[in-house]
Length: 330
Image (tube, rainbow, N blue to C red; front, top):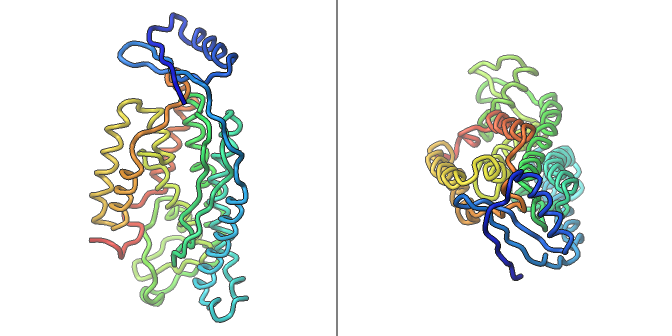
């Protein structure tokens, strides 16, 4: 698609004149990007691309695959063998429903907010994988049209993690009600998990203080809740194309480039606690730091968006743990 470029200064009052220019370009059926560079305003405009109809059958197939893969993992976690007895897949329902509820809530938070703000977004794509712990690599939506402005970028970026975080709390409490506190070592060679602040608070709310001579054996539903908090922390990392990267773009502007490298460096160092962090550092770098610009990159954030960004930071702190899987470290 061919774009044209105009450079100069939008006269005061910038907000009113910017709104008038947006209406002018929209009236001619053009898509226009407004930004500020080197003390000048820049307008890049052209004809919007023609979007192909969304292939919703792909969403459905991936969703069914994720249901099956999480049922399999949930059944194995409950001590059953669905390979020998296929109907024992049904024992995986509690875990499957729980993890899909959390991931689906997260992505629907993005989807509904994006559509409300006029962004063409796809329904969630779930990712089934034969991972023995999760059965899925999560889910995502794809935004097929530009975000209107930085305010919308924050709202769309924050919506998913906040909704997913809220959904994970009752799931965790239900799972904890089915979990058990046992003597240390009685759980056998189970997976050692780090404890995010929010998970520790919920555990203390339900069980009180768990002593050093005791272990908490998590029910698969409680593990799904733990995974929900872990996924929320991953998504809120302020780098690249992650939800936190969208928020960082809107909040930090050009400083986001520094933020990207700080996050990648920090993840590399966190490999001393968990080997997965360097992998995520490489993954974020491979997907690239370049972020799609909103149509309006001039209008500053409002008070509501700043509060939402602060809420995202609080949720990140509550959900993050440097050693999520304590056994996998240097």
